[in-house]
Image 1 (cartoon, rainbow, N blue to C red):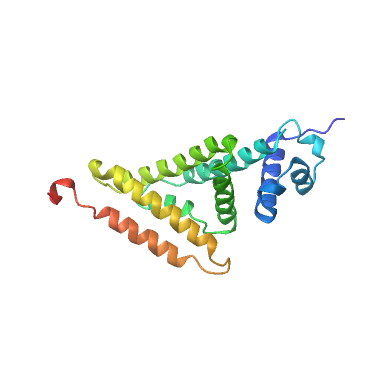
Image 2: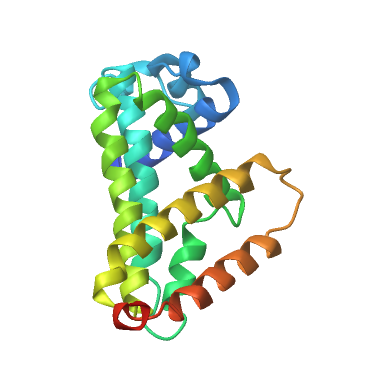
Length: 196
């Protein structure tokens, strides 16, 4: 009787193995053979789904965005929605830290890798779109949405990068305070008519 293979589960396993190889050994080590070994699978079983290193890199990046989207979709609407979304964008635990490390590694590689560039742009846009949703959700005046979205996006990116550079044993309470302060500031952005 042939074994039934759950291809989605297998691809998730392979992508997570690619993440481990990327973080541990860097992009030069990312190969179908090495990822297959990390996943405990024969290399021949990956050649159809991931025929090239580029396809592995792209899928690894796409899965970061997919996981973020799943977590955000699970957040209940309400008064704390904006805060919860921003905290999902930050490496607050081991799994999100790994995702952020993958984002940094592959985002850097995308500057010189045309095959990865479109995926990087899509990931960047997904985060920007979430930042805009947060800005709108807290009631920023329509005229200020673009500027406040850019400011929030820059704050989230910088904060996330800072967090993965700190030691894994250091806490994240300080980052939560930064998010809370920024959200409070957003809620106090004066309407354009009050400025001039």
